[in-house]
Length: 176
Image 1: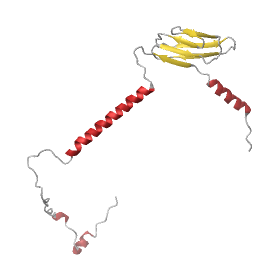
Image 2: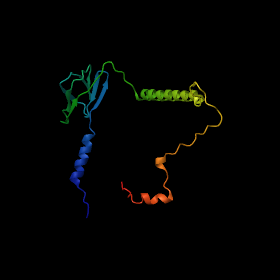
Image 3: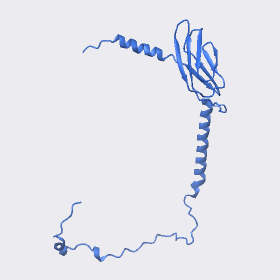
């Protein structure tokens, strides 16, 4: 069986790959939301429905004091006739602090080092107390351990002697 290249399918996949790379860039800082249009032309027109209106600056659309309400945005170019739409549902926080990756990594590393230090301190101070027990009212003798006498045999469980085997020969073993 010969595999023939499917040119229409290959073209469709290539077109889908190119169109997927054209995405909006959304940046959120505090209550300011900045959206960058994937079009590269200079005559970009922004349209907003819902939410607060923003200011447009070339390819960027900036919404200040965004209130986390959803908005539909579209950017289009008159020269090429293309248009891209975006549904914006960005959650913003006025009193939040932004942390970069280095700060978060430092916090996690410091936490691990402090935990390791506490673990080492606990081990160091507890290793001398391993053999010590709480003081008891009657200390045990330190010499040889006293041996207990053997238990008293129970007459109900005596071993079977050679002469008594025929008494138990008629009993059948049960299969469990």
